[in-house]
Length: 145
Image 1: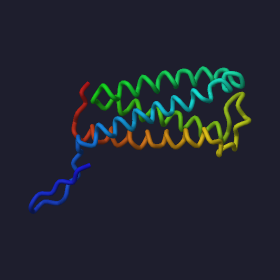
Image 2: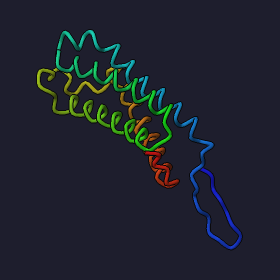
Image 3: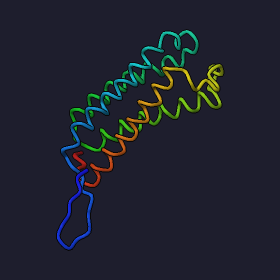
């Protein structure tokens, strides 16, 4: 974000389009990272809990699709899709590790699994960047819909 100052006026934060390509690229890479992490965990998940394996497949496809959409479109729907997808996955992880999911109670309390930690980190980064992109697009008034 660029800070714009005017003589005799208070400082105002103005969204900068200069930051947007980098933010888009990092967010798209984060979405692809989420897809990759779940792809790596997919074979075991299909054996242990098939319905979660199917959800992983949908997540992988959605992650790739939203990453591509984010890189091609300059509208707030792209930011919203990235943010909601990452937040939903992060919430699912927290629920799975805290109270468990049907047929997946073995993961309760298993917060330190390396793939899980990597997933939470990437998901949190995508949520923060997605919210930032969404707020900036709203401040610019660029719905592009």
